[in-house]
Image (tube, rainbow, N blue to C red):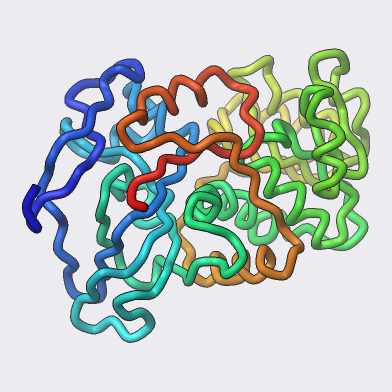
Length: 322
């Protein structure tokens, strides 16, 4: 390996976890206003394995071969001309470029300096890499989109997952009454995170158990047991459904209008300032980061297989550099 190359996970074709392989690729060079970050850990998200299979963000990444991943925690190695907010040696984390390619499953990435934030002082790189995409999705849905207020009732589906466990904590931090759906085995943990009520979706129709919600953060979608459409029943008149996994179909929009509630699609965006705020909440002990398992870069395929099997508590992460 030379100074001009690096290890990266590459796929030449769409398919299952077996298409992911590590190879030597050119090391990127930061352009104006960009920084080169040496990756210590890279988070794994459902959009990663969806994209690997040809859906997700596959249409945004250009022609194969390409490298997956958007969550990064690492150290600034080099700064491009014009960067004034970061310098070499700074420990940072971020979700650069989304939904365009960030190539996070690699030893180095480049991205605009203002898409990064300084890493939390109280967690390591593995836990920091678990934060950006999931936490930004939760933050932008709960805070920016739904504008959750003190005393509001917020229902969060798939609350034990990566986005869900952050959404529970953010909504609770804002003073909301939080209702979380998850399997019974996760209920005690979710209550520790701040959920006021928990619903076992495997035994109970959540829309019957949760009534008069001001906001539903739906992390499941209509592809799975019509969860988005069923969520409409849990809302009070004029309440808001934030439909995250698949957006808002014409059928869902029509059903929302007929029910007298609002619905909006959602897609997360890079947001360095929000990551700075989130890092402060983590360091202050207001938000916890859950990592179920970390895999070495060479086991990216095994990590994807674990994620696709479902029932993950929190996040999965790839370790890249010691």
